[in-house]
Image (cartoon, rainbow, N blue to C red; front, side, top):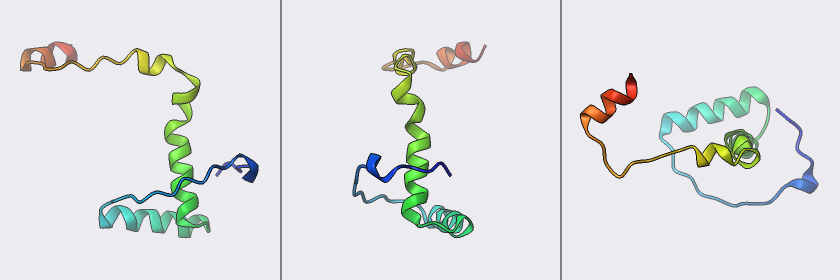
Length: 78
């Protein structure tokens, strides 16, 4: 896990809902790494958005249609 300078931290209190099996996996990850659940969730959040902030083109390239047909889906797979 990458060390985060405490001066760079922003406290963001949240409540999340996950399935029981997901909570168990997160708990096991925290125990295996000998860190708190908060640190595991923080690391996952950091990893999840690390590329979004540095690469604005990532979101600009995404097109989400209002609707699509089965043929549109089949065409996109080709």
